Image 1 (cartoon, rainbow, N blue to C red):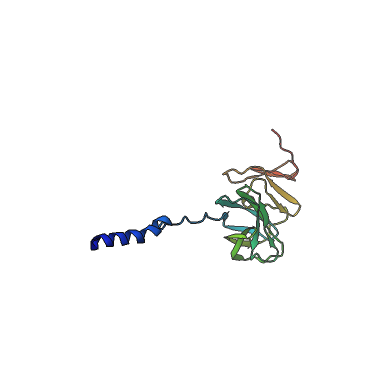
Image 2 (image 1 turned 90 degrees about the vertical axis):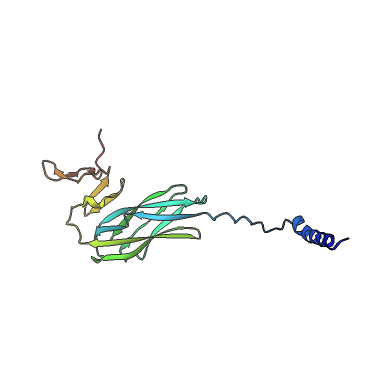
Length: 194
């Protein structure tokens, strides 16, 4: 056998194990991405008077087939300020109330976070809160009612949000001057009429 024939035979024998074993540098497929979620809040800042409340919308994006309930809470909130709720399994939004106690100092808290937690998964979104002076007894600030179905209370007066419209609220009073109705709102306990 010639030298060239021996070289060809030797190379063939060396290459056979790689072919038989599936060698040759083929890439292995990466494992599938783990289910998770992302979290965003809107608005990312609120101005609420001491003793009042406001609302933000928490939006969840479910990724890679993630399902499950997500517990939502405020992180780093000052004493007297609370925000907690949950996004139900399969849901994507939550109207989260932010309640400010009457004794909370009037200042801006700029480095707060809203946290979403489901099992070992934790996601956060930045949030800031400005606590303003308390409202006068019986006064309600319609700018703070940001979620349909939300409630707002000032003293004995309660606003129940019926609908939001892109119009500035106006006030009216009945003949006795005791009931105020604002555009888009009804006094608490007042039944809706067609």
